[in-house]
View 1: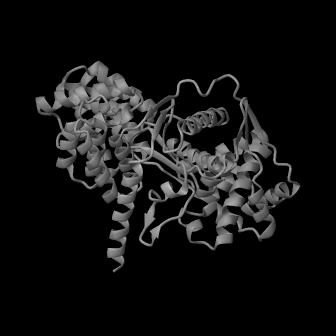
View 2: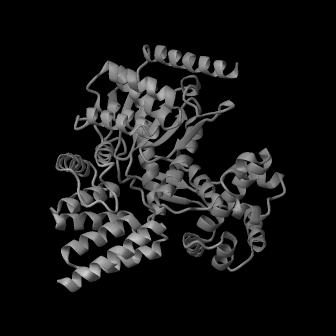
View 3: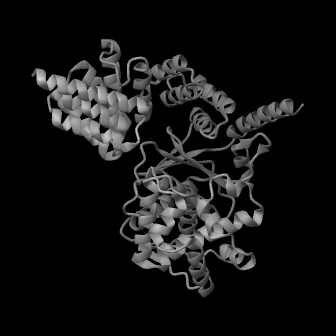
Length: 497
């Protein structure tokens, strides 16, 4: 019975969504770093995009060492009210999970969704919190949960004026929680894992976020450059694989209990300094491109949101409808290809990507996925040849992809591989891999490919150096073995020459 009810709800939600779409207008706003999709007014959607750009600029001034460049786009779904947002909330086995907004990062797109019916301060707090999570994820570090949530809470309270952004503003709700309840042991906060706050008692979950916020505030705003230095030392030790508590002790030079006492003193003092960043240098409304979406485009955007929130059935219905309404809709065929990849239907994915290939609206990521699908059975560490027809088509797709977005390490790697196995443009292959290594330093697979290319060029010393670095990057045993075998072949080739 429960399953029948869930299926009935699914079809009811979908039919209602389709009927709503027929009588409302959806807009899409493109800014330099975001795509905002909204059923609110065009002015409201433009405002969301402009203020996201403001926040990104302010954040980049305080986190200059962080990467703000994502290989996949960031799409913001801004719903005008909860009624239109409710159909797109994430679902669990127990049904819909209530939320005012959420973030989903992934290999194909980063998605932020929120309800605009609240005040601007409320929905901006949600969207800023989620964007900080995205920025942290781009650094490819495995941050502790307290650090992730503390940083997100610290910056989420930002207030934006026409010419000033104030960051690190005091969070009164966190102060109330810290004043009302006995604090969690600092060791629990430092060692918490992702599932912990979701299964804790409500007040313990609130305490975790409040203590994480206050700790980050103390280090980032309350301790000046010394706090930044200690925090960087701590994160660096964690990235090297140190135990969390040992890394804390070595970085801060004190026990968690001693730090908890310092933190309590800071919170009780209640000064909470904040940062101000000037924004007057830029006109944030300039450069925004606003369009009214067609029915097919709305179906596609809905399908993407369903797909990237793990609601595959709903996604497929919307995407099929988008392609029915507009058979030459390359972006929709591309997303259908991604859906097939998620289901591990590789032949179907290739067919969909081929339908999308080189349509004007196919994305850089889609062209890379098309090339990868073409080469699925002909790419790997031990492949030394690719059928000519496939190689030429893949090369064409990858070249076009990099023209659209040069900051793609995997696309650069795959195109360099195609050049290597074809024995053409070896110098260009070298440049591609070196560029990819600047984006993903220490990637074992890239270093292996780099060693192959340098060996092909006859630069044996540099090739061996690249292969030796693989052992320091915690590579998989299979790749380590391949690197050792390639090193032996390079030694033999050098002697023979």
